[in-house]
Every structure is written in C-alpha cells, then in structure tokens.
Length: 404
Ligand SMILES: [Zn+2]
Image 1 (cartoon, protein in one colour):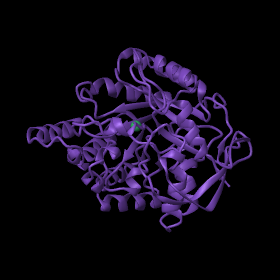
Image 2: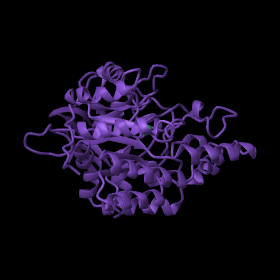
Image 3: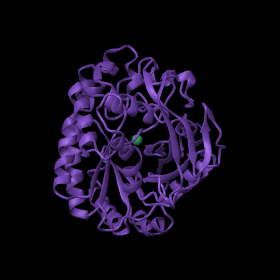
C-alpha cells in the first residue's frame, strides 16, 4: 500500500489557442490507472493570471483525479503582481516562469518584482531553467550550418543552458526570498548548480522527469528521433547516472512527468526542423511503475525514497494539504500496488489518447492494482471506475517564511 502519487508537472489545461491531446479527462484517466491521484497543471496568464486559472477550472470540470494549478506568468506587469495575494487566499499558490522565454532578460526587473511579491504571499514559483541566450545562439549556429534535422536537437539545448539559468535562478531566489521549484532538470551540471544553491540555504527545489532516468541521446540517432523531443533534450549515460544518484541522496526532491503528448504524426511531420517539433510525451500512467521497476527493483532506490519523491515531497513542497501520505485526517488517496505483476508497455493499452508511448515494448514489473481517491475506488483490476468530474480542486496552503 502506497500513498497516491502527486505529479506537480503536467499540461492538461487548454490555452487560448490550443487544446492538448490529453485534456483533463484523458490525462487524469491515465493518471488514476497509474496510481497518480493529484496533478498540477500549468495554466497560462490571459491578460490576468486569474483568467488563466478560470480557464483551468473550466477544463478541470472533467478531471478524474484531484488537481491544482501553476499559473504561467507571461506578462509580469504591475497588475499581475497585484493579483497574487487574492490568488493565494483562494488556494492558488503556484506560479511558473520560463527563463527560456525570449523576453525574460529584457523584463528581469518586472520578474524580480513578481518574485518578491510571490515570496511575500507564500507562493511557490516553478521555473523552466534553460537560458534563452545560450539556446538561441546554439540554435542559430546549427541553422546557419544547415543542420536542421532532429538529430541536432540535443546540441541546440546544451547542458550549459541549464547551468547558466539555474545559477541565475539561484541569484534571483537569494535576492527576492522566493521559493523556487526547478522543473525537469536533465544534466549533471544542472545538479551541481542545484547543489550549490541548496548549500547556500536558498529555498530551491529540484525536479527531474522520467525521460532523463531511462533514455539517452542515442534516441536522436534514430529516424523517429522526434518522438522523444522534450525540453531539455535527452542527455548522456553519465547524466542518467547523476540523476539516479541525486534521487537517492535527496538532492533531487521530486519526479514530475511534464505529461504533454502529441500524436506520432505531429511529432514526425516531414521536414520539421529540430526546433519545430512539438515538445513533450505521455508519462502519467508509467510514472510509478517504471520508477519502481527500474529504480526499486534494480536496487537504485529504496521504496521509502520512491514514495518520498513521488508523493510526500511534492505534496509538501506545493502545499497540497491532505495529499502525499497515508495519515489520519489525510485524504485516503491510496494505491494498492502489486510488486510482481509484469506488463509490457503498449500504447494501445495505455489510457492516454496518444498513439505511441516513449517506452513502447519496455517490460515493467510492479503495477497498481487499485487506486483510491479520497477513500473511493477510482481504479481496480484494469478498469478506471472514477467518473469525469470526480476530481476536486485542492486548495494549496501558502508557504510560511520558515518552510524550506
Ligand atoms: Zn512542462
């Protein structure tokens, strides 16, 4: 028996111009079948931050799992900054910023103001830490050399982009007091920068993503390389080893899926340059089984650490009350887990709407047999029993100044 998993990083909500292949209904069906009972989805500022959250709430009306949001700040205006206290009062304590956005540096003063206000209001700020200048330069050089193919994707976003961005994120955390959650770290140098930030006593957390634990950049030698495009790219074997060490030691705090699949045809559209492939893959249903199979069964991770990175820590870091542990007064989100069942991953058997799985053909031992959401059976014996709309918004607690 395990607590239901908490995934702090998904893209299930729509935007003003785009509806994801896995919306809340499809995505959380996969989540529930995989033992994930709470998801945080990104939503995007639409004029106001509040409007982005309202869109998320409308979309999440079909959610099967419980949910919360991080709202992406695309325009760090005075008006957006002024909204933060009221969002926190309503239990929306998550922001996200993209350091890789073209205008991030240009608007740094505005972002600093947002971060100060976020710290004062007790919000957690998720940060996509790749440096725009490094990525833009590498991308331009590859294009200039006629290297447009997807095989060059890893070179367009080198570990240096993470290194530079994480160091500047740490400076921002030091300057503003903000609590920063670094999403999808992928490289050994990223982890070194995270370790330095933590050693300084900053409120900085690190997430990695399943892809970086199981796959290497060799995938980009294949003709179907685009299927594995995500940001950042897959790295070297040495980086994979570093990820496992950091999960074991506690340097990395969580594993978040960044669940954001696109159909095979969209990924493999002919003639797409490396920077035009839609990024992201499906990962909600396999998050727990693969970390158990490849981590715990192979002796790379204890069960306790697995539960910590998949449930306890994400719930605590994001202020998701009642989630992430099996406790009196908690929400009774529980997974009954069979450590001996072996299944081969087939996209056709997964609940995502996607027509391929990044781990197709992978033999995985250890699967959920029952998932309980707030004490109700949501999944049992291979069938999802929860109904669209059975998921609820989790009101997130504000971080206290002393929490770290
Ligand atoms: Zn993401």
